[in-house]
Image (tube, rainbow, N blue to C red; front, side, top):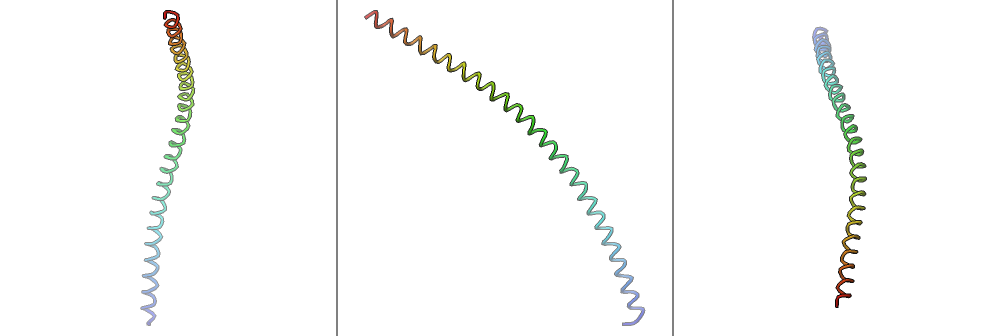
Length: 92
């Protein structure tokens, strides 16, 4: 290989290396941007998760109150039925 061919080869390798470095920098910038977007999305999901947990706790508390009311109404209806039964027994 002649000296000129070696110089041309080295020059072409240098040009290719520069192109690779530019492409790498562009790709890294895109990756960094996507990383920022992902981090933002994760933060939003975490915030929504906290809100959901708070709402779920409120719902659980309300469900407990409702369940207690249903139990009380069931007892009252049961007692009413017992009273009707007692009245029917007294009648006959």
